[in-house]
Length: 290
Picture 1 (cartoon, one colour):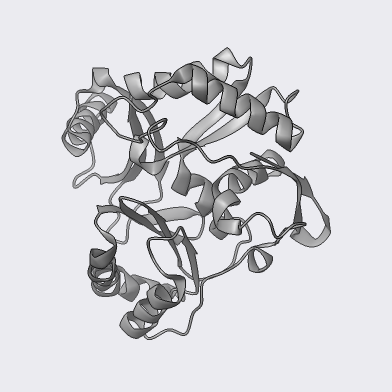
Picture 2 (tube, rainbow, N blue to C red):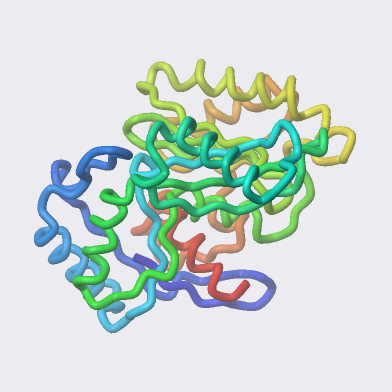
């Protein structure tokens, strides 16, 4: 849990923050299976966490879910729809195929993105199984809190790469115990999103494949626009930061390092909390003043 204070010159300060270690079996993030084994135990843990952070009286929240609890896709329309009805029909087909679930089973958020280099319409779609999302919503409501925004973890982390208006593409690598999510941002919009389920020894090969796709399919567009990859943010323990940057630099002929809190305009007042631990919730917190 975090609360930020906006400072001068675009610098944010961590005003209040706390973390808690949960039993491994209490929350098992999954897209299509039960996530929370004991809602009462999780509710108690969150109350203790809010007390520790000095935020027990806070009622309005934004929530970053584990990435495995939801999925994110960029859907591209190969041909322009002739009507709004056709648009909805095509999007429904793509959503159900992409998430392997019927529309009735899903809680969906979608946003129209700028057209791609070929002029095709694109949509950012975030989906969770309604039953899974209701587990988390039920916990929040039982505490008397109101969640105005509930999004995957990588959406919160990505806010740090889209907030300052820097030129050039940006790469987020967000890992968990089961793999990683990679997002390439162009400006403030996602260009590529890939979630890869893999073991730690497979990560380097999977990252290399992703970077080759970006280099061969997208970096040409970036070069024409003066938007070559200029920033990398690596969050989580599955991908070693130095090694991941080596792979990025070797594949894309860059000279980048993973950004830290200070690079992104966040002042940490204590060393007891790592930026990796709070990147997602603190990124969401910055939305309150945009």
